[in-house]
Image 1 (cartoon, rainbow, N blue to C red):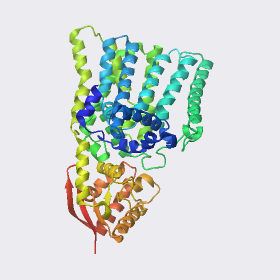
Image 2: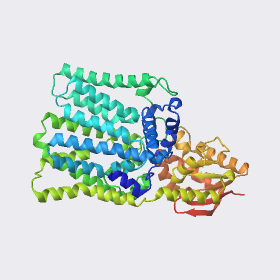
Image 3: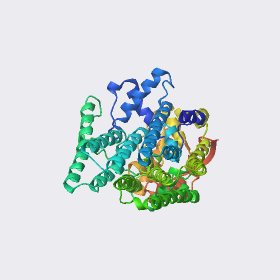
Image 4: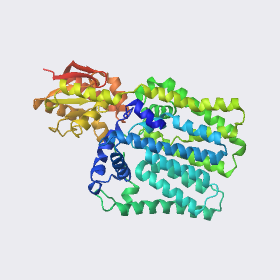
Amino acid sequence: MALCGLIAWLQNVHIITANGMYKSIQAEPWIADPARARLDPSNYLYFPLYGALCRLLDWIGIDRGVPWLQFAWLNAFFASIATTIVYAFVHRLTGSVRAAVLSAWFHFGCGFVLLLAVISEDIMPGYTLVLGAMALAALWFDRPTHLRVALVGALFTAGWLIEWRLIFPLLPALVVALALAPERLPRRVALIGTLIVAIVAVAGIVQLWSERYPGAVGLHDILWTGKGVATGWAGLSWDKAWMMLSGVGNYFLIVGGWVDPLSARRAALPLLVSVALQAAIFLAAVLALWPRRHEPRIRAVAIVFLGTLGAGQVMNLYSQPQDPQMQINVMPWLTVAWALLLGALSLRSRGIVVALAVLSLLPLAWNVGALARFRGGDAAALKAMAALEQRFPPASTVFVYWGFEPITMWQYALWSRTWDWDGKPSDAKFKWIAVDAGAIRHPDWTAEHNAEVLKRDIDHAFDRGHRVVISDVWAWSEAELTGQLGALSAANRASAIWRMLHDNYRAEPAFSDPVAGNYYELQRKP
């Protein structure tokens, strides 16, 4: 109820990320006609699951026909299950009801957990199942049996079949936890084999079930979809270190700087404060539990949660470390450290309990305040859309965007479900060119070729008699563009793209909206 109330109060299910809108559009066939809907290898069970649940909400009468809003209600439901998992896990681990309650509130209030519980992003159901698998593994792998291992493997597989990349952070931790279990070597090897068999068997059953649907793939392609590989999201750079700071810091306390390396640098101080608080919780928990470091259960808990942290952040550093959905499943260690610290303290004194309760609720209070800044965003965006359509009639206008402006999501959803040109012009209602397209889809391009394709698309719009307007990306300095492209491992393209724009075109202010941003009328230079 608390999450539903927060959703109703915020009236904005696209805070920080608009990815949920695109996923809700992709789910529409699963809502309207699931027998003919197409499977997505990287979200194999997500769309069938949320399609069925949206049909249920339609039948009940909750936001009928508006899946992007229904997704938020469903995420709140799964987040509530995740909170229950935390409570049950901590109660079993510590034997303390008070520690379990406070830990559940602590986890509930963590920045990215709370955020993803009230918006339409797609990670929450998969995260909830994987969190359940982590909790069971931490409690069972001190005395593993084949049945326990198989159940963990099955639950884990159901989770990553909803969101494929969830397989990577936890699988190494599960294998290491079994490899270091207090069992004889042959039994440990057999238990690891049971885990692998359970994972493959569940995936195989799902593959057999899926054969009736368009887009069904074989078992090998379910296990490896290659999502995000060979795109601009992949790669290592120093810019990713700033984005990692953003992801880890904002996971606990939402303070800003979550979009790109430049914004992370600007928010460095509050981000570092958030990370320092997390480090303090970790060190306090280690000191409190150090005398128990040889206990098999404590070791299992540490391996599962810290192993997931380590493997997950290595993967994140290669991809999108600032993204909330990339951080949520690798960061539960923070709640576990807080829970173990609470369990090690005496919770019999009323003063201590009150103090710890306040500390446990502080992240929730902070993050609700941070989210409050985005209240009413959905209605404001719809109003901006109407103003934008009146000022720039879509039939005769081509928009040039950086590519991540939130308003593009609304134009895509409400005008025409068409992607940016990227060298392939179209006559759809929403005609647009994205500066970041080359960096995302064509990591093998040279900077000069990237700039050439963008120029060709813009000139093509002019040649067809269209009006061309450009967003605030026009007003960016070359340094700003370099920082933004750094998030896509393409900072080296900034100079060529910036020079192409400013050497060949001029622009005058044409429209300004507090939500949509500033627009400039683009013209060719003589």
